[in-house]
Image (tube, rainbow, N blue to C red; front, top):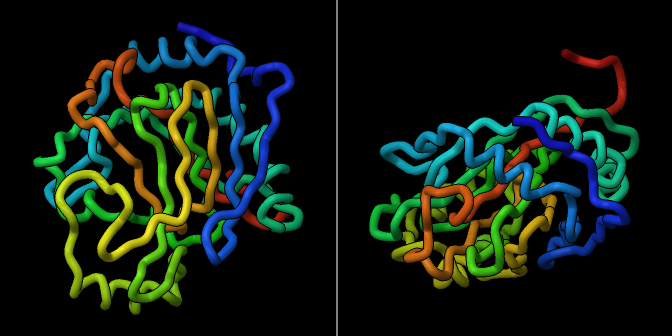
Length: 238
């Protein structure tokens, strides 16, 4: 199965900031010219569980076409460099997957019931492309109340982990984050909407209607996720 990964005509990336730490957030509506074609590719994939005994992504994942990853990276490197004041950068590494949230709330491990970061590397960025609609929920961003941290770095990690070890995890999927976290911003899922944020920002997917979760990519909470690591411009590394 083949499809075009061209951008929609006239698509624009908007930039805003979230939280008291003023982290940039990029967002585009109607991102891809043929999002239905991308969903068709997902529907033909063999999805596998992405979680383990202690946590992980609360659902299924499948391979994302390399051509899609490359197209998204090519489009976003320059806007990312401008929005995050990175100077001259180049892609160092990119990987991605189709993702489907499927776990019932009762099956979630503690780590899946609180906000998280994907990395503490400030040069890694999460690119999230919604292939579902508003009913699927969205993505929210949080402040850890006890430390005030909205993003985690290597320098902050030990202090954060020490405090979190004394705290718990609410039942079910993350909502407003109470009592240990405070929600600072929220992006609603929307068909063909794309958002980009730094992977070290505390965040969580929101699932307001778990009874609607499905393992069918055409009906479920389907996203295309890419993690892009940038580096200062220089010789290309394979």
